[in-house]
Image (tube, rainbow, N blue to C red; front, top):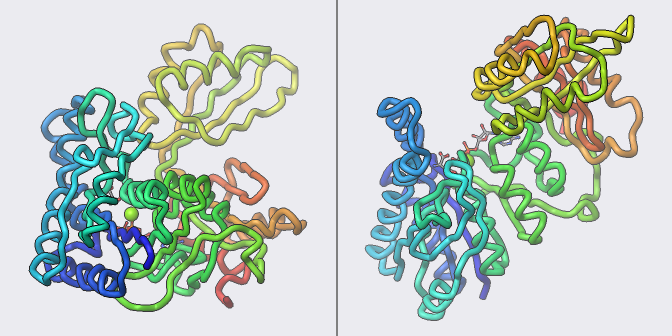
Length: 406
Ligand code: ADP
Ligand code: ASP
Ligand code: MG
């Protein structure tokens, strides 16, 4: 007998028919003798609709009320799945985040899970009851509902699996697993049977939305055995593993892109100590996350240009902060561009192979794609390019690193 957490994403519970199919999968595990906790997302499109309503109601809304609204989609699917299971003669009940409770910090809209009290769920496992838990939500220190950021029910699932010390956490979604690139962009993308936690963490944080970044971080830290698989068929999915479990290592395991980037260039910034702190300090104080940064050397040692990227949603705020600090920063002009995208290649094999960057830049040059900013880490290389070229770039890199032939 095993303890399992099964998570169904939006498309997998998009209507009653799909919910019945998900219930069938849960029932099969229960009949095999396993104890099962299920995390559900809202029906496909529901959360977007709710987010839209909050924006229409008030442009500058109270983040606590935003959470009260957008968390509601998961309540519906949790209740419906419990009903369908009960109809099939399986003992099940739905749980909302606050009922368990799933404690989070107080950052409404992007809360982090701090602890989960599993006592009652475990007691009911002994009675063979299935727990259907609303994903994406928790209870903040202010005793209000919080949400975990978009795609957050992956994190709910992994956190619950860690708390329950589950044998497996199966993430059921609308693709067969983790691919070498988003299969809706690259027709020849290949499913990976295994991927390392580290690579998945990079892919997720660089734009592959198949798993929320925090869920991978949590799986890695707690050694949760996560499998990403399709709710539509029975093919085996992708298992997240430690590096030593990968037998045949590719140099590059995946190509991905993050569309919602924006670039700011400060022209002719004074080239003297303390300027970077004067720019990035206030941005951080205003919760603007800065990603890539490049600073040129100045010819005369007096002034230089400085370019950095922020999330597109933060662009206006970032510009306002910089303009407000103009006197302290001392720059001539500010130029911004919201039509950029970050394209990345990821692979632990990069550590031991030379010439990977060269190959990436050549593949982009052959398509006449101009690279605006570059950033690297041990297992990834990212470039910022004009967003018109994002899909072309992803396909070109996918071919250049022979991922079409896997
Ligand atoms: P769910 O609603 O089940 O959580 P998501 O839409 O959040 O599903 O994530 C699944 C989607 O992630 C896929 O439909 C696919 O388009 C996208 N995706 C992006 N990159 C990848 C990748 N490398 N492998 C698999 N899917 C990817
Ligand atoms: N329903 C939430 C969202 O759309 C959470 C999730 O699906 O993971 O972001
Ligand atoms: Mg998702």
